Image (cartoon, rainbow, N blue to C red; front, side):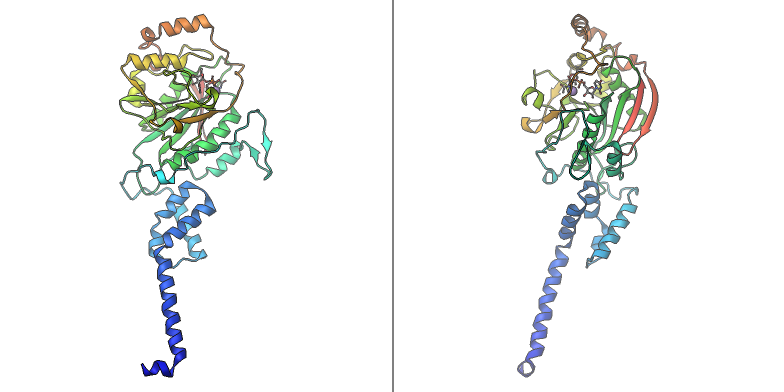
Length: 372
Ligand code: UD2
Ligand code: MN
């Protein structure tokens, strides 16, 4: 101890060195958290954020600086298409969900330019740019660190709703990615001048999805329905047909009647084939959803909705009736609904005569054009 008294400067140096060692060890212990936060703040992209969290490079590099971070980023992006190293199943990470989502929807069918110079809703070109890390066709293969339990086909009937589609794509991708699901967005566009036939578009979308991949859950989704809460997990139920809507702004955050199944409806492959898909005979607005409800009951299925009503909450973008989708004549609709169950096994998937005229794979979605 005599050397300490003789060399007070030496003592000071020893104390300072051990102090910096403790700080360094502390940083090293929590480095993953620091990096995660950094990534979250700087990129705001769920897919990339998840990749970073699981990066093996972070474990190897003890000390991080800006350069090594950038290197890790590049390395991970290059690995995008590698096969997944794990067989662990993806589960919903509730802590990573946002809950209520504040939506910015316009009611008028006009483009607006925001103060930052962006067109609102974002243009398709811009959407394709922000979703460029998806596989083309709006395909998301799930978080890197796990295997998806379910592969979803999101089927969207469509014609003349470009603005709605832009809102839809802007909001649906981050939501499904936060829910850690694998999915493909399939927009089925009626490619003729005839009256809109939503049932045919739905069936056609289902058959197309079956031709390109192995899906476990088919979610039939109106293009103008935007979820207000990401805790409403998109899902199918094996024994029941899942209707993901309890509350809609259009109906003062109620649904109009219990058997109402408009908006967002989820079937397993077996369920959709068993009910023989949608009726193809509803040309124009209305009825095809009530017809489907009859098909569901007739085949012995029940309806399922989320337990908590306030998470199954949607906004429908305000719109007028489309010119080429006039309301079906009341008498005709009554007749069709009356004969729904007797027609079920001969009108639907197995009687579909549509022609697929084109398939375009945008980064943000697959557009399937169909002549009715
Ligand atoms: C209700 C139901 C809808 C359907 C419809 C009756 C809700 C939330 N939805 O919607 O599921 O049963 O009544 O047919 O209650 N579409 C186009 N272009 C068109 C026409 C329709 O893209 O020209 C698509 C689009 O995805 C739209 C969907 O079909 O969201 C339903 O049509 P709608 O929005 O005109 O009917 P709406 O809001 O009364
Ligand atoms: Mn609508």
